[in-house]
Amino acid sequence: MLNLSACVNPSMILTSLHLTRGRNRQIHYSLHRNCILRFKVQYFGDDVIVLDVCGQKRSTGKKKRRPLTKKLFLNRELTPGTSVFQHRKGKKYEINLPTGGQVIIKPQGQFINVWMKGSPLDQENIEGLCGNFDGDKDNDLVTKAGKVVNKKQPDEFSREWRVLSDESLYSGFCGQVTVAEDQSSGSQYCECGKRLTPQCRASPVSDCGSFSKASSKKKGKSKKLVDITQELIEESQAMICESTITRITFEFNITYIFIGATFPTPNGITEEMARNNCTSFISLSSAGNACQAIAEVDTQGNLENCIDDIRITDSMEWLTTALEAIQEQCLAVIETDVTLWKVDEGGIPELPEVIEAICPADCNKQGTCVNGSCVCAAGFDGEDCSVSVRAPPEVEGVVSALCDLNQGPCPFFLVQGFGFLDYPSLTCHFTLAENNSMVNTTAIFRSEEEMSCPAYRGSLAISNDGVTLSLSVRVVVYDSLCEVCTDTACTLRNDVCRINNKCYADGFINPTNANQICDVTSSKTQWVTLNIQNIVVKNYLFIRIIGQILVTRTYNITIGGTGTPSLIPGFAGGNAISLDGNQFLS
Image (cartoon, rainbow, N blue to C red; front, side, top):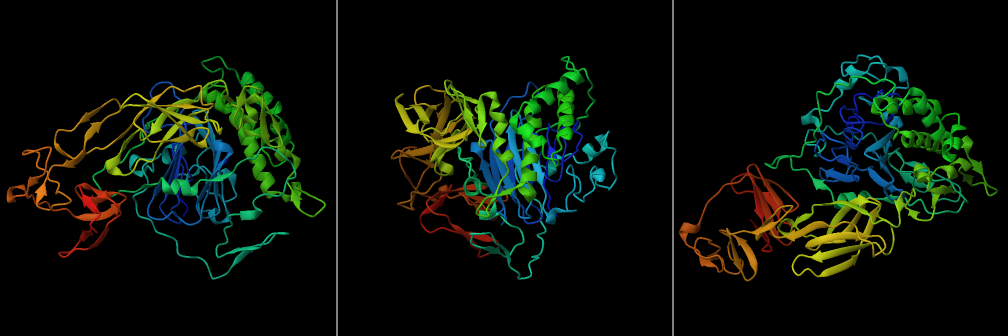
């Protein structure tokens, strides 16, 4: 069974596969509240992809907007058929699943909007908040015991599918997986298109390849669809299930009970005000108008959802969400209903005109949608015209701002924030801690919320134009054998040897003379001759090697040096580690 895990606000009344809102309930087809998405494809494997705009800690005050964080937890190789694409420089993400299903994710302020697209293989193989995908929309709210719940009061259904702490996928998946048997019969499945080379594969699930887009003669700014699958694999976090490392847990209120909401709201919003705002926002949008003309688009349903969202949250921020929902439905219909397409004089299908009216966030009313891309007004830029070119980018933080050379190389810092622009002048500005000198380097743009800079030690600021700087953040490259670093300061260790400007742990053997060791009780600046009193025997049960970590039942040992050693059968049972002379354990 394809098993994805998620939770959203208990106040949500689920009416479609478009999931929006809050923090507290689970579905078995994706999300751990509306500002975080994570899933594992249990039908085919045990990989977990996490998209998060909330962070680990539960906020008790006003929610703060956060940049989107993407993580991939791998149990060995990525499940074949899984891919992740970034649209419009991070305004939208597309996750393609091995079954042919698809997850569409759009960051929206302090939330994320999620759309699920099931495949024929998913039919009747889904459970949880997304219903059972059996073609009957009236029996989707079903408990684990099979009880159909009243749609008007889905509290029982919501509580039933909440994610318990030991079921959370926030730090990956460590459970047992029964991999489905290979269903292939040796047949080949091929796609053929006019003037295109046929594509054949053993699986009936297509990645669409060259057939993914119909031709369009319209000219405009590139929508920039980028495959970031390999990037996520290279930066993935391997699962360490059998270790003493404490897994990060995602905090939320498991006992939360929604008490209901009515009009007028505490801020005085009436139902009429909500309806007028939702209606006018959609109607004044060129995309909204164009998509409403397509019969399969549920404009009325999205309008009612918009009103419900405002009633429940006492906020008008859901207007854009309603428009985005209509746009995604519109795109889904256009992709599958070829009767809406046109054929040019050469017999090549073209997408209908409506596709050219769909732009991200309707260009935030600070630009014009032209041929499906935003042409921004003076002073604004970005894929949706949301970035002021006069203001510096907002730097929210750095992923792993404390980079320990003892755990591996530190090639770059991943900077997160808002308003990064894909300009040649996007630059990293360092003030070095060692001498207070300035170092300016070219940045690597990844999305409008993420970029990378070379790793230095000091303070780091970012500029879009090379002149106007953001607020700075502290970044540290250090060696934990030499010093202990926190978010605010570093202090030298006094329990290690410093010999020839290099640090060695107490008891470490001289790599060039096996008869000498670091003995801090005798000397912290030179090697000491080994004697029998220095020899300490400890026993460890080796489990596996993950990166530069040797995992044992009681302790995780760091592997230093170059190259990766391997585990081999031990002389007395269990595993032994084979070192080739270029590695050491500490």
